Structures are given as structure tokens and as C-alpha cells.
Amino acid sequence: MSLLEVTKVTKKFSGLVAVNEFSMTVEAGQIVGVIGPNGAGKTTLFNCIAGAFPPTSGSIIFNGQEVAGKKPYEICQFGITRTFQVVKPFASKSVLYNTMVGAFAQTQHLHEAEHIAIEVLQFLGLDHKKDIVSKSLTLPERKRLELARALATKPKLLLLDEVMAGLRPVEVTEMLPIIRKINETGVTIVIVEHIMQAIMNLSEKIYVVNFGKKIAEGDPDTVVADEEVIKAYLGDEYVVTQH
Image 1 (cartoon, rainbow, N blue to C red):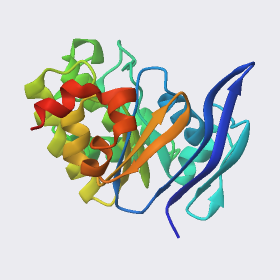
Image 2: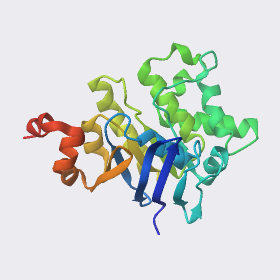
Image 3: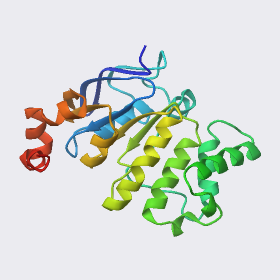
Image 4: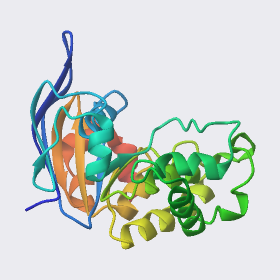
């Protein structure tokens, strides 16, 4: 049985179909990429999986249990957590405080939450900044803090929504081993990203979304050679640069 099974999930907003009968499976331990043009429905799909939006129809089975339509905090307690495209920490609070917010998804005890948070910050190399206020962090550090807050919830499945957006190429390169390191601890990852270098480098399997519908799936080499994917998203320029 797959860790995550999304079956014919549709999400409508009034007359707009943002996600259209989308299906995907994710095995435990995988890193799976989701790509597509802006407005294709990728973040809406994440919102359905994480509980921000209930699907209009379809099924989302996680670890053998139907989670479609459950509240975000319930889904978090099951073991799914996500990051956001726009990083918004509690700016006037410390790095440790921000990370402890995530830890309280699993414990109500202050000392235990602090212990979890410090372990996560050590894992991500942010422990030396634990007492400074979040607004003084650089963008790459704020991205890692977003990861820290998510990891403090102790997820089985981590949904990364453009965690590398806005980073310079050297910073993207530095982020890749961090994501692999998270995966190596046993956390399954689904990543939405526009940086093809990152997606190709990390993903075992890629799903391509356009106008809310899945137009391709497969290993990275297969997907980037698909004519429909090239036409809808990558463009001929990408293909040329890879040869």
C-alpha cells in the first residue's frame, strides 16, 4: 500500500476548476516532484492534501486512512505537514519560538517542545541562531526556519511548496543536500518547484499539472522528453540547453 494515494481529486471555486480529477501515488521514502505552469493548480492540490481546502470530490488516502476534508491540525497529527511559498515567520519572535510552534502539534509540554525544536535546529544548522529574532535572518535562513517549523511537527510526509523560490543558484545548490538529508531520516517528500535543476536532481518521479489536470508522470528523463510537457511548460529552450 502506498503512503499517499490521491484519486481523482477535484477542487472547484465557484465556476473555476483549479484541480481536475488529479490522481497520484507516493511510496514511503520517495521524493516526488510536481511541476507545471503558474496557476496550474499545484498549490491548490497541496492545500487539499494538507486540509486547507476540502476537495470538491475525490479521495486522499494517507497511511491507509481517508483524510480528504479533515481539518489541517488533524491532518498534521496524522503525519502530513507543509511549507509555504511565501515564508512568514513570527518576525518579532526568536528562531526557537518559531520552531516550537511546530513542535506543539505533537506535544503540549513546554520543555518537550523546546527539546524537539532544538534538535531540529541542530539538524538544519540553525541552532546557533536560536535566540535571535526571525526578522534578522537572511532569506536562505528563513527558508530553513520554515523547514524547521515543519520538521518539528515530526511528519511522515512533507509537502514542500517552492522552498527554493527566490534563492540564488549557489543557495539552491546548498539547499539540495538539506532536502536529501531530511528524506534520509525517513521523511517522504512531495516537492512543488519551478527550478528544474532542483526537481531533476531530487525527484524519483515527477507529475506534471496543467490547467488542473495531470498531463504526464514518470521518471525525470521521461517527463522532460514528453512533447506535451515541453509544449505546456518547459519550452524548446529547456530541451536545447540539456543537449
